[in-house]
Length: 483
Image 1 (tube, rainbow, N blue to C red):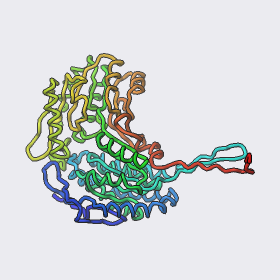
Image 2: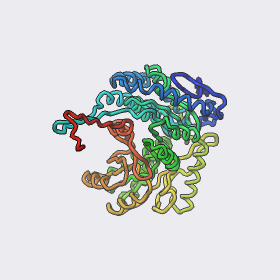
Image 3: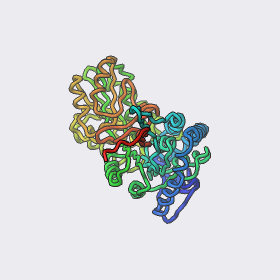
Image 4: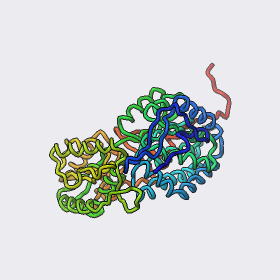
C-alpha cells in the first residue's frame, strides 16, 4: 500500500526534493503501514517557495479576474473527473472511510474552486460623490498568503484557502499537516495542469517550525490557519508581530440543543453526524448535546440503538461507515478522555473502548448524565465521544451553552421556528444550524468567535480577508490652501 509522491514539495510549478530536510512518514492509520516517506522543508526550500510566490504574484493580480476564474474552473473540472483517485489518496492519508471522502473532501474542494472562480469577476470598488470632487475605492490583492492546514480535511482546507486567495490575485505558499501531507501535492499538480502560472501555489512540508518560518517571513502578507486553539494563539501572536492579516479557524466545544418538541430521529441523526462523522475529528462538532428532560430518555434509547449499527472497518471498503482516528497518538488521547469521563462519574451509554489491535480505532462513544464541570464537557476531545447533558428551560440552556471559551458553532432542534431564531440570536458562536448540523456549503461564511477564531472562510465574507481596500480622492478643481 503506497502513495509515494514524486517529491516532498511543489515549488514554482515543479516537484522539488531536498533530502537535507528532516525525514518523516505518512502512515495509514487503519493498519499502521507507511504509505509515503517525505522530507520537511529546509530554510532553503522555504526561501525558494516564498521567492517564487513573490515573483509570480504581481503579474497574476494584474490579469483580468475572468482569466483567473477560467483557470480555477478548469481545476475544479479536473478535480471532479479524478474524484475517486483523490478520495482514495485522502482515505489512505487520513483513515477516513471512502464512503465519506468520495462526497466530502475533493468534491467540496472543487466546489470552492468553482465558487470563487465565478466570484472573482464580480468584485468591484465604489464611487463616492463628494459634490464637485469624487472618490473611489479599489479592491487589491494582499500579496503572498501563507496557508497552514489541519489533518482532518487536508484537501478541503487547502482549497478553502487557495481558491479565494488565487481568485482575488494572491499567491499562496501552503503547508499541510505533517500527518496528512499528500493531497496538497495532488492539488498543486491539478492547478498546474489547469494552467495556473508557476509560483502561484506552492506546497512545503513540515511541522510547526516550517509554519513558524512562513508566518515570520516579511514577504508574507497574510496568514490563514486551520488548527487547534493552542496553535492558533502562537500563530496569531507571531502574525501580530509583523502586523499581518490573519484568519484563524480553530477548535470548539459546540452545543447542540435539542428541545423536547424536536423530531427525535432527526435530532439523533444530527447528533451522530455531529460527533461520529470523520471519527469525530471535526472542529465544529456538536459535542455538548443538550437534551430537554422531556425527550432525554427516548433520545438516549434511540441514540444507543442507532449507534450500535455503525459499521467500523477498512476505510477503503465503501460499506465502512467509520474509520480510525488519524494516528495512534490521537487514539490514546481520546481513550484518555474516555477514562476521565468514567472517573468523573459520567454514565457510559455505549462504546468507550479501542476496537482491534493494529489500527487507531475507537468505538463511537456516548456519555450521559454529564455535568458542565466535567472535563469531557469542557475540553475539545476531537474523537468519537458524545456528551449528553440534561436541561429544563430555554434561558438555562442558553446560559450553559455560552459558558465556554469556545464559540465556533451551535445547533438548535425544535419545531418552534420562532424559538429557534430567538435562541441562535443569543448563542455566542460564529456558525449556527437550525434543524440541521455541520452542513458547510462554500456559499456560506464559516468561522468562530471567542477562542474559536478570527475572520471567516468562504462566501462573500472571504473577500474581506484576501483583499484590501485602497481609497482614491479625485480633486476636480483648484486647491484651496490657506497659505
